[in-house]
Length: 79
Image 1 (spheres, helix red, strand yellow):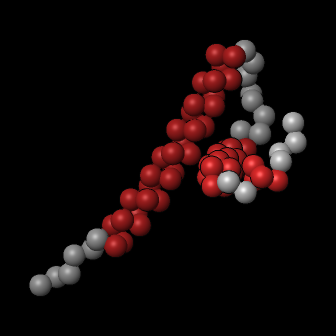
Image 2 (tube, rainbow, N blue to C red; image 1 turned 90 degrees about the vertical axis):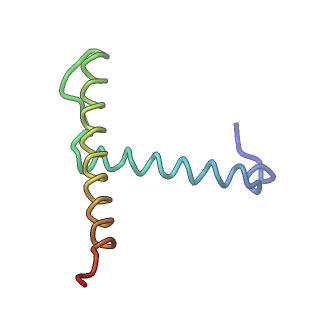
């Protein structure tokens, strides 16, 4: 189904496109940096477990980066 021009001009479509880009960026990072371009195991249970572990590693990396930035900003001055 082709997207009509009127649909692409709506604010809802713009918001949806931003959200889709965020999700695609996360999957791209999983594939390129975490090494999830190919699954190593077969069967749905094994594949989902591998994906969850990779997503957890990705989230931990992002959390460490966020906390490091927060500590850099919140360093108290010595009085």
